Image (cartoon, rainbow, N blue to C red; front, side, top):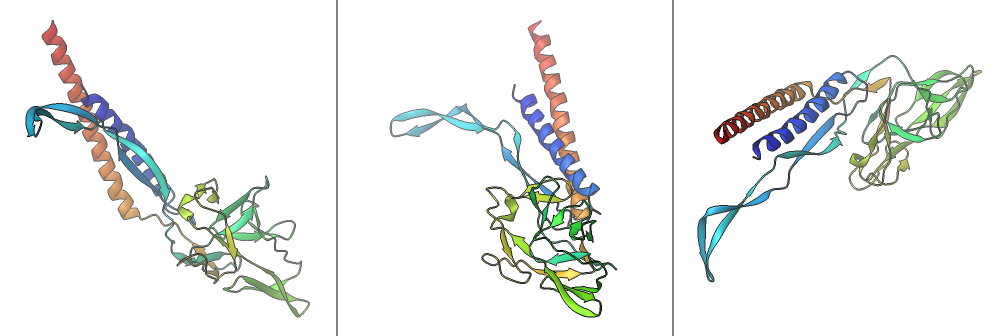
Length: 264
């Protein structure tokens, strides 16, 4: 009997959906968080003989139809739609208005990419994120620098001993297929074969096709792009689907019980 197996596949798929939606809701207030999206696919179907016959040129043949075996978890994609930019009081809070990413180097030397522009000056006077990952290319901010300004094009200027100076240039990175990026911890992303090689440019410059790296907004931070209302609706639908599959398992068990009693 296929009923229990089909329902079990539905239970597993909807459990994964509930976990994914729950994780999105838990990060609704996480700066720069990008929501995950689920994709389901139909399991392999089996050809079943029908009691009907169809007439063809060679004579009567038995009609067949396909019976599905349930649903499977297909893949999880990242919703890279931009979140809202909220104003802050810190000059090192940088938001991206566009599709680009900041490039940082982690403590193990790995290059990662992020949309979270909550930066600081570390012990080595380098621009880094709150986890200590250094912005690439490295930017040094001298001791005693004041009147720091980060322009839309990523240029960082300030004043030292009364003299205006340029301290560095923030660059942004884009990808031909940003949906192919691999999610890592601390809101970081890693490049993959699916995403393509990173393409570096100055903020405001075009990237590939119709994509634009975007500009840098100082005193701003990008918020999560999780749509709470839509996520709650999706969660209710997944819960109801889970309950329906659970009832199918119970019905299948009852049918097995009836079949066993008939044998006795």
